[in-house]
Picture 1 (tube, rainbow, N blue to C red):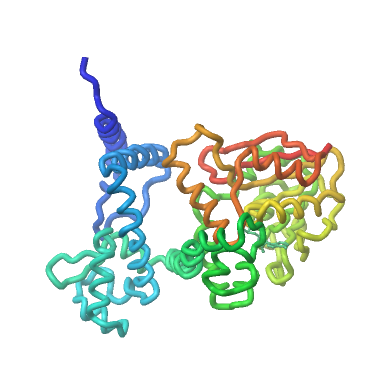
Picture 2 (picture 1 turned 90 degrees about the horizontal axis):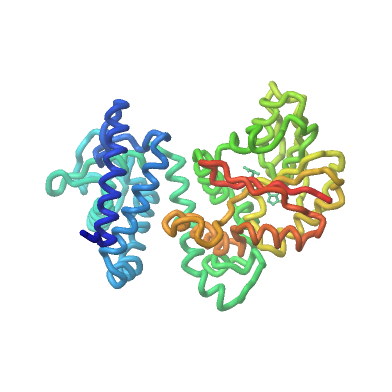
Length: 417
Ligand SMILES: C[S@@+](CC[C@H](N)C(=O)[O-])C[C@H]1O[C@@H](n2cnc3c(N)ncnc32)[C@H](O)[C@@H]1O
């Protein structure tokens, strides 16, 4: 009997997944993916699962074939520079320095942006190793699908700028912050504070810096537009029996995206959107749901003033805070709660041991580290959510953890006894 090694098994799975993807693309009239300028910058959403499976096995194969030594050395020795050429491309706006369909010289790009020729060439040639720009003939530069995306997508550029201006310096000081403030739960004792020599918590500090706050806001708008964060996962009747909800409070609800979605779907629901005064300022509901939505300035560390709601929502709020502060936010809600009320927490839920492949966990675990690096905040798994709620008040009872397929956020339904 022939026995196959793991790398052969993986290679055969790669073959099978790629064939299925190819078949779907060709039978639906999509071109096969290439790095060329004309290649679409994303895949049809129906291929999401198949692509994830392919990426998962391809990742394992790459790591196995590299071997531990080459893999660790590549991560530390050069992969970090992938971000640095991208940083330069965004900072100096190199992707818009020449028309999408033209081919120009390195010199022309350097001149267009007032940069030194040698630096420009080195940055671009490094980026080209990731198929960001190409050099079709010696000394000539043209766009690829990736560099075109950088030229045309302002949200993506804001995302990169925010990540590399704020998050990368914070990440690089995480271990120093761990040494200086071991186990700290304070939002102003994180890598970000050491990186910028700033004694204030990142969100507060950025709020006072108009330019950085604008880039942060644009980058979050871009990030939130991803399909995995769509509000329909929460607004669907399958997630929560919204039909029976008379009044809900969207705590830290920003400009009311969820409430607007709910009000449009359930004409009898009333929603109060709470956020900080500076965020909610002159916010007004859209005309078609103005009778159903109201905005209220409220700091969620203070006692919840709306006492007659039947459901309180915390969407994507608690992961911005360490347990010490998340408990305070939950405690401030307690005086408003009555038996039969529900609290819905819509947040990431880290997988329990053995329930998700290491490859698929990587994004979630990386996000968890980012939360630590910026504010000593965190992502949580089911056990962490239980501990957090019990720590706030024994009367919180978790009824259900829902993980809608395709959603990046779990729906945690909590009752009040
Ligand atoms: C990551 S955003 C989530 C927004 C919204 N819930 C959503 O799902 O899109 C966190 C929100 O918490 C708000 N926030 C931060 N500190 C707050 C506070 N002390 N009181 C009320 N809202 C606050 C922010 O202004 C922001 O709108």
